[in-house]
Length: 247
Picture 1 (tube, rainbow, N blue to C red):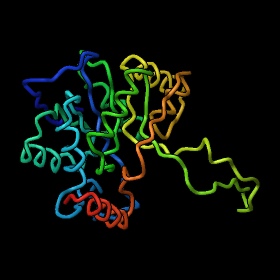
Picture 2 (spheres, one colour):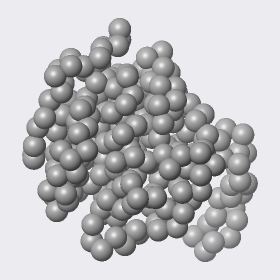
Picture 3 (tube, one colour):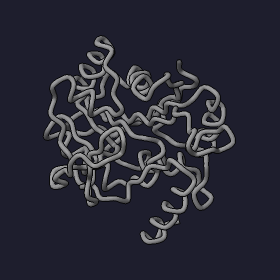
Picture 4 (cartoon, one colour):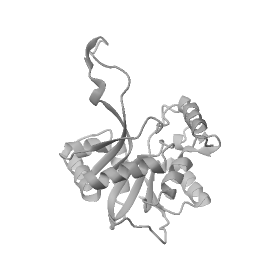
């Protein structure tokens, strides 16, 4: 599964142990339409989505190593790109599986034996910053598992199969969940392998933890941490960067 490996010579180690980040870039990108290439290779103000994402994690002092999970057909593009940009913490690139869940597990198999915390992040959430990573990690070290999230501000309705409203939910306790999602190593291992053994399918890694019976702490990190999904999201990202005073 490993396409290339480049282990950094020096890791900064938290008092709580090493922190390994798994960056997921193995999705089909069908809604983005980037000429068959991964949406993470699209550009926002001249810088690719994945470069922005990796730059944030590479510069974060609490992150010790990075595993990038990609589609097989994009592997050579990522290999050249990562070498050219000189990301020091990228340990290896691995090919993903048929689902997000399978891709995360493939990445997990490559983390260091010394790792105590596992960070799962969508490569398409390229506006991630150090403050957000550190905030979620802080809660994970206290609670075992934590995730970036934001409060729902719209009124939320439940509909029947014909599209008619059945009821209105109390939005007070409803959240939009983002990434990074950060886990103690052993809790992620139990969650991932229990789901695999039981054939349980999840759409994010917090669901795996919930299924295994673990509690997940929500960390309010605001609404800027958007995921690039369709072409219009590029404009949204550029607007957010402009407001931040960044390029």
